[in-house]
Amino acid sequence: MRITYLAFIALLLLSAISFAGCATDTFAAMCSGCLSNASADQQECTNQMGANVTICYAQQYPLMMVAKSRDNCSEFDSCVSQTGACIITNSIGSGGNMTRACQEGTLTTCFAQMDVCVASANEACRGRGQEAAAATARQAAGSVCPCLTGLVLAAFAGLLLCSNKDERGRGKD
Image 1 (cartoon, rainbow, N blue to C red):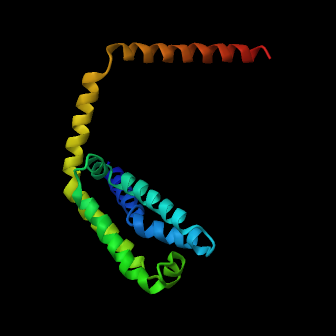
Image 2: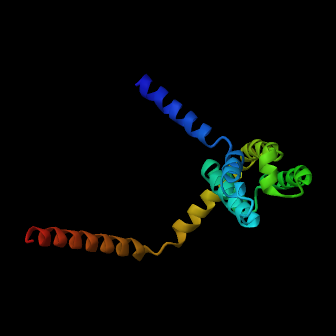
Image 3: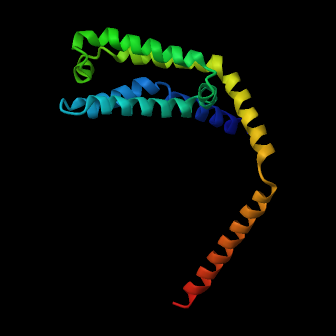
């Protein structure tokens, strides 16, 4: 039992480590990917980077992102603003060219600071996210049509009948 518990704790720690640097890891991937090509569309690449970072943070900090979706996590917005200011300040030397910034490594600190900032924002916003998620669940439970359960069961029964029919039909071939 104790080994299972320790294995579970190790798994949790490893999963936390794998998400340890959403912005840092995504920026590094972009630098070795689309931003490594000087002829690549930098705007498209940075837009994709933003989307990838958001997805990563949503996986790592789902309750914070719930609070953010309800405009109830200004701490996250502050992190984004601080990172934007850092990028502008540090990319001046590279003429605003992201490919050059990747080669020089001038923005790595900005994204590392963002990861630290977002982890702190998560601590501040997680409770608000739990409240928002609970309120949404209560609202959904109160508005679900009672006949929906019957429809789901009927659809499931139909799938079972079709799969049984297919299995019987296959035996004749």
